[in-house]
Length: 449
Image (cartoon, rainbow, N blue to C red):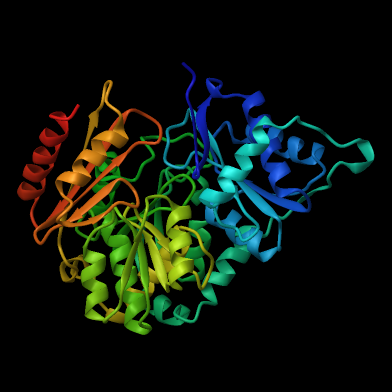
């Protein structure tokens, strides 16, 4: 069966087998009806299928009477920032993020440059069943290009109050940069040049073909970790293909751990100004520990950038993000942004005048274990409801499946939006305890299936 995944994160599929031209037209047309009028920003990551998808998306939007501003190969956060900067009515980032080469996707944005909210997503889907219409020749949209989008995005980062360019330059940082041949090739070096950071490139050609699995997790970064060890650098900087996730490697070649990306940025921001923090329900408890040091509150949202942003707006949060390496800093824009994450991290290290390994050692330490269970004929909602009843006397959150918080660990049980499985995420103070508890919850669910 062809694979097409539709969620608030976008429309994602394998090119030619799920994500086909007619599917791209169908969803772009529905999105155009949702937008109604005005201009839409379109940008893409570097993958090979991007040009083909871009032409179909652009042509469809123009045929529907919308103006298109094409900003080329850019990070997803640059698309988000440009929607806001150019006061557009929407945006489409053409990227399957950390999925392999054969995938592509449409990430749909509203007029504020954010992912469609759950309510907006549902409204957009109602247009899928509407009769499609296209404008006559004199009413089609206008096409233009805006090649300065990345430069404008970086310029805004450098103007942030917390960024001291001269201080960062004075530290003469040297890094190993891995952009997995994605959109980071066109953007991260520009930022590092402006900050006076020397860099050695790895997987930074313009081919658009990922040389390894593109998700920036330790098991996919063995070559990168080795290169950090061999090149005597201050750190490794790794981004995913659309540059919304930031993963770091210490000067010793140890994973900084992707959960620590948001933890250390929260620590840095709150050390300047106390305020609220938002992370998703699957993000490390270390964020809570850090916020507590500054007397600040942490609010948790369902998994997904749109959900985190919605909760950030509700709570007027200063900083937010996800444990996968996603930093959302509203002073710039509401979206996960590895570029602003890099700048804030360099500023943090420069002010503390310490190595990345020392910064890691000073953060609260936890271990996360992830498992999943196939449900066969059982209904995921019924299984989770059984677990909610079983743990009803504990501290629980049911906004996105079930999260149970206990003194020595937490567990998050959530159903997949795309396959009949339940994900089990457990965090504890040591790896053995996390593994043992994950097995315990796995067995409890197996008894219900």
